[in-house]
Length: 64
Image 1 (spheres, one colour):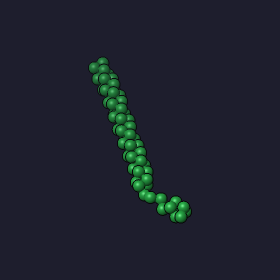
Image 2 (cartoon, helix red, strand yellow; image 1 turned 180 degrees about the horizontal axis):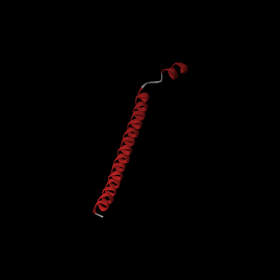
Image 3 (cartoon, one colour; image 1 turned 30 degrees about the vertical axis):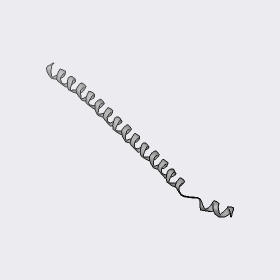
Image 4 (tube, rainbow, N blue to C red; image 1 turned 90 degrees about the vertical axis):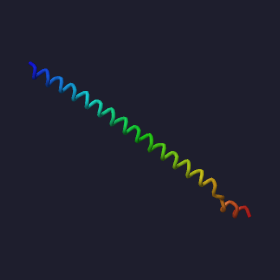
């Protein structure tokens, strides 16, 4: 009886440990996704800002 109870408690503990590991894994993946998205959005907005600073020479040539 004691061995069976010990193995049941061990299995419950392992199941709890697996759930904790999966929670940590999902949190890590979500954090990675959030930082990646922020980087891509920042890169895109920064690129637009740089392109706005460049004068449009083609339009000036067409109007002359």
